[in-house]
Image (cartoon, rainbow, N blue to C red; front, top):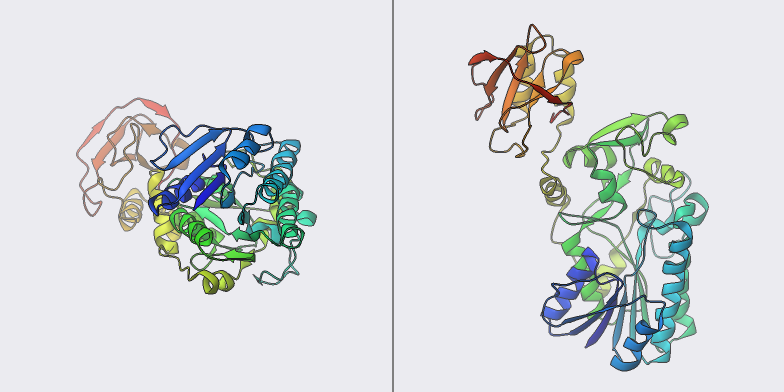
Length: 405
């Protein structure tokens, strides 16, 4: 089978292309970006999907199937660019499929098109209409592209069209709204809300799309992975600290104070869950995820050199009255020298909250501050984190630090 993949330079699209090429299919990718180290069996054409060179690929190659993954989000494009690429690009490639006899077309969408609101059902099936345009204006272009792809089901019935609405993608190399939010050391959450977040490992997502390309499929399908996880638990498991923010001032927080930027409409998705039912896709294709939520979150955290945060450890540390009590808190976190991230200025500082600073120490060491601000006592954390204090030394202060607990 000859398959055209638009947006092939993306992380997820590369995984799909590699799987199809390994299965013996001929893969032709279209993207404005380059993929210089494409595997054997994958041909990459640098072109805009809305321009003539992209149409020439359909006209000269006569592919059997299309996997349309060339969509952009608010993270990388402005509103007018999103409309031209998402809606205009989707319309262009589907018209090429109709004009040049492509038998199968897959549109890779997102589950967030269903929208988040307090009066919507918890589990969304494919029968639920996309409502994100009213609550999340930055998703209006993706909702329109999703709807146009769905119109191909009755406009061109000779094309086997399927719309896959994938949940959030997470993993060591994943990019997207959820990965960008969790990449920061602190994540803002709306005070009093802890919605469920549903995600799938990037490997499972690529396998699901490749399986859909090889399976007769028509209609709209939700693609899901492991069970959803509460937002605050997800933050701690990937090594980020959830920071509750009152709703009246939440709109002023993203993009400041070290938080990831978020559009104004994203607040509803931070308050209310968007959980979808993926049983229809599993029954049609036999798909089942292989990587669970624990392994997915652990791989995401490990890729960024983090350790999972244990929610009560930091609160116990803040409530400790002495350095000895705080060292016991650190011991309970199992921060050994082998598991600490290898950073040039890594340190866990224990002492007064007013003088927390990073000092030049080897990775995996723990510094106790007592007495004068620049008089430090250094000790290496052993297997149990209880090595005795060795000596008092004077070390230069280099920059502000963050906690690993």
